[in-house]
Image (cartoon, rainbow, N blue to C red; front, side):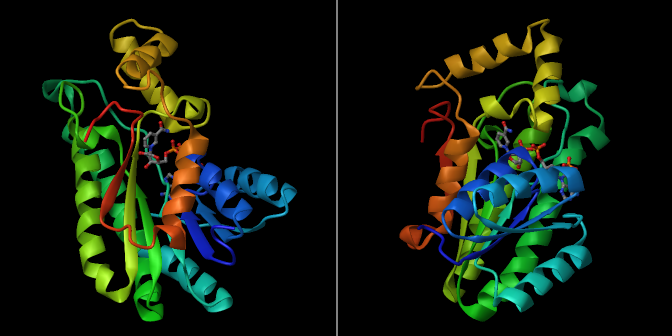
Length: 264
Ligand SMILES: NC(=O)c1ccc[n+]([C@@H]2O[C@H](COP(=O)([O-])OP(=O)(O)OC[C@H]3O[C@@H](n4cnc5c(N)ncnc54)[C@H](OP(=O)(O)O)[C@@H]3O)[C@@H](O)[C@H]2O)c1
């Protein structure tokens, strides 16, 4: 198994990507610790892992609060001998699709502050343990906005490019201690629209041009080389590989999971 006995903390563990990753991490032998905001979503994610025989614990932890995250990560590390993998899958609904003149400063800053704060907080909490133990993997998630241009993307672009830069810099800082940092950049995930904040957000963007959400998503798929959007399971499987020792030479990388919307 890819992650046998690894201790993996997933923030936003009840969310669409967090729960999908948790399922695959557990299947691959990891002991999974889900932290998140809403207990029912954490319980749902945990019960499907338990049904498959996996090892999982849950905790309500605000991933924006350094003290709360430190306390939780410290407790997991103390009880289980360290932290091997830390994934931040926290997501925030935010404004996309509007021109700068129609965007408030608060709406612009919401994703920028949100994503950059939570990833700092959770990476800092894990890095203290990983550097002391001489190894570990920090996983972050950005979006295609990091590399796109066009109207309506300023907050998303700044957030995503910022997070990719953060991940790259952190990889350089932690590399000498044996800690890897891998960022994944998925395109819109078609099977997450029913559970993710993106469902509402994509609906609002589509509504700006009076387009049904499904048609808008089909247009997005049409802009990829593979003529389709990625699925949750594909991102989860990639994250499990990136977290595993098979990827031990991989760090400071942004994995392009856009199905060819962006070509490197
Ligand atoms: N879905 C996509 O199409 C897509 C595409 C590219 C990248 N991504 C990235 O994937 C990541 C996860 O997105 P998702 O689609 O899985 O979103 P999601 O399904 O809406 O899940 C986000 C999770 O974050 C939790 N959360 C929000 N604020 C929190 C806080 N302060 N403390 C702890 N947990 C908090 C939410 O808690 P609640 O359960 O309480 O709401 C929710 O469980 C994001 O970084 C996003 O940018 C997603």
